[in-house]
Amino acid sequence: MTERALEYRWLLPATLQDAPEGRRPAVRRSTRDWIVDIAVFLLSAGLGLITADEVHGLVGATEPIRAIDQLVGALACVAVWLRRRWPVGLALVLTLVSTVSNMASVPALVALFTVVVHRPFRPMALVVGRTC
Image (tube, rainbow, N blue to C red; front, top):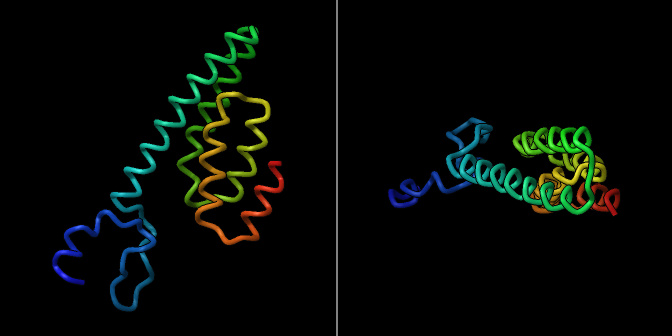
């Protein structure tokens, strides 16, 4: 790599960074991966809270239902951190959870997007076909 390319190496995802001779590619997240994951987590949590607040205001759900929805939504937002390791399984689980929890809908969309972008056609078709 040239010196200029090494300067911007932190901008590459961990899967695209060059591995040293005779070694496998890095499994750890790169700086870019951390920035993207933090942004996705904050976006999921923020939009999930806005969605939950709007929907609960319209529907008029009881307090225990709201608390359960928010707990499930918070767990779904935390599960977004696992989308790089288990994208297909997480997408399937979160789409099922999002059918009963309004706050989990944004993390489910993030998981679906990850599968569509990073997986071959067959697993992507499986996940998208199950959600429709």
